[in-house]
Image (cartoon, rainbow, N blue to C red; front, side, top):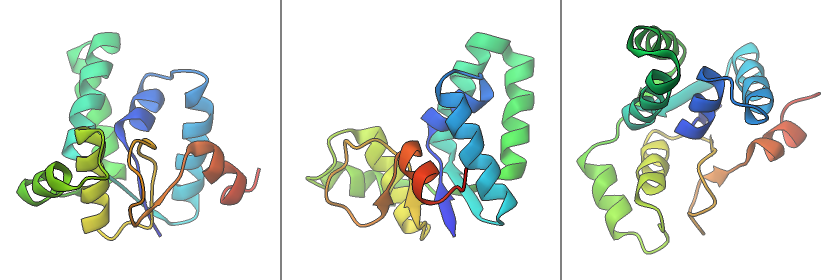
Amino acid sequence: MKLFIDANILVAVINREYPLFTYASRVLSWATANGHQLMTTSVSLAITYYFAEKKHGARSAKERMGMLATRFSIADCGAREVQQAATNKNVNDFEDGLQYFAAYNADCNYINVSSAIKRLVINILGLDIVLKTKVQL
C-alpha cells in the first residue's frame, strides 16, 4: 500500500507538536512496520523545512529533512499537478490540490490531506480514521 503523507503530519512529527504528534507518529510507525510505502512531495518537504528551521535552526532542519528523505519516496509535483489542481472545480485549496494530484498520479492508495478537497478518487483519511481502521491499537 502507498500512503501519502502531507506536510501537516511531517511538521507535527519533526517538531513534536502535540497532540497531533502522538497520532502521526503511530501512523508512520505502523506503516513502516507493515512494509507500506510512505510518499510525500518536495512541496511538503519544503513546508516542513520552513517550520523545522523556525523551531530548530537551519542545521538541525536540514538534518531532519535528510532523515525524512531516506524514509519517504518523493512523488512528482510539477506542471501536470499544477494544471490539475488549477483546473479542478473540486479543489478549494491550491496546495491541497497539488498534494492530492501528486498522490493520485503516483498511484497512492490513501492520502491524508485536508477535507478541503471534495469528491475526488483517492481515499482521503484523517489520522483518526487511519488509527481506527488500519492501526491495531
